[in-house]
View 1: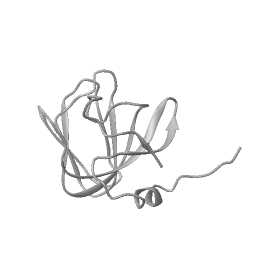
View 2: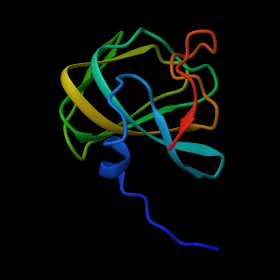
View 3: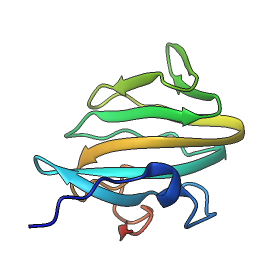
View 4: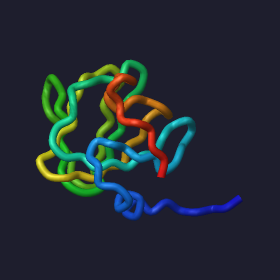
Length: 118
């Protein structure tokens, strides 16, 4: 068995696409993903799981129907299961996401980004 750390900065440097998470590991049936975000994502919700966001760099707003959550580097927020939300950022943001394995990022398998492992 090989024990190896994951360097998130190195993983983020391997792609430029926005809103296209990359799986960098797993944890108890969950995908650990990095993503680059810019602009606004679609309003969506997840029927059967929470949505975890940890900002690595930049400033991210999680828009909620009853108010916004503003996050900077080192801050995290968990969107509760079933709560409609829209991630938004003016400038590029790098995040760590944790979701149940194979959870569609848009909440809908038809419109979700493909699952890509790096």
